Image (cartoon, rainbow, N blue to C red; front, side):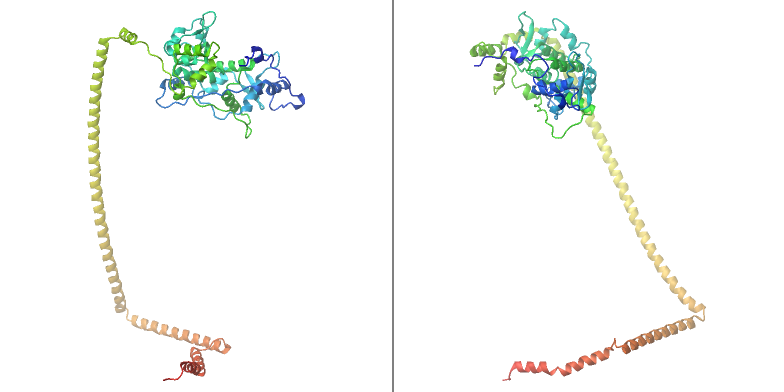
Length: 492
């Protein structure tokens, strides 16, 4: 086995890169100064980016988590964007480093835009809310004893203890010591609030934060994120990663930072699901000691966590003895209160059944009334249709009578005119003579037109055409018959 690296090899002594780019190639659009450009091409480009993760739970899975997210206004925080540009994140961190001798602030610079990542700016962007609790995570962290025993009972499985430091003060817990719900919040906390690459140990500040979240206490998200960004800028450890890429992307989008097509995106991790939270429920303390003894005294926590994650089945806790469970059950048992609760439930159930029956009766009455109204409307509609048909028949009869009467009146008028006016027959005779004269004139005009065309040679009378056709038939009429006769041969 190779010797472990010394702590000195994992530290870098300064924020200055080993070899910086010259001032002649300084990109004024992307960087504030040559110093910030050197940061980008130095330690910033070597760091890995740890993306945030959100929850993806079913409607009936861990309702407490969904309720807590809604009460705190963490909907945006728990749903990070899936497209985060990697170069924007690295430029943000490179330009956030102040000049040597200058204090750290909350202002960075990305592609010509100033980015404000102060606590108030982050909380305004995320639209977080304060809870109704009077206590906060920050106040609990200032206390010497933030209720260590109560924290164990709240977020850990049974028979788990704190890992203490050399002074006997609780310092951390194991990830496998946490309950499934606490494991889900741990994954969220170590990615989105207090970033870390350690997946096995849970430090005190993260444990207390998970407890505060479960208890509904206030958490200053903006201050936590802003201070952790500056903490990463000040860190000299090579294991420190660049966190909060989704927060930085949202701040850049809000400031109107220009995007370039086909830029490399930050690789996103899977959402936190109920299956992922319950993958390894807990490992009993005795089993852990036996495995540690079998592997030797130098088993690393990270290796132990990986071995537990590789188990294809769920590791369950060994339950306490039955007599202990029975004693705990009898300790807070109240038979009279239980009987009272049962009677109250029976009364409530009886009232509920009465309400349901009354509701059914009301619905049946309403339904009968609706059916009666429908039948009445159908009767009115039938009467209206019958009246319409009768009216249409009467109108037809009236129209026919009107037409007959009108024709009779016209015939009568024509006969009356001839009777009343003696000159009417003479008038009608004159009209007939005029019509005959007009026909004669028209026939004469047609004859003159035919004669004129005949003289010009463009037209022959129909009789002449018939005579020419008959003469042609006389001249050549014998040949076909002769041919036919020749073809037939002699008659036998």
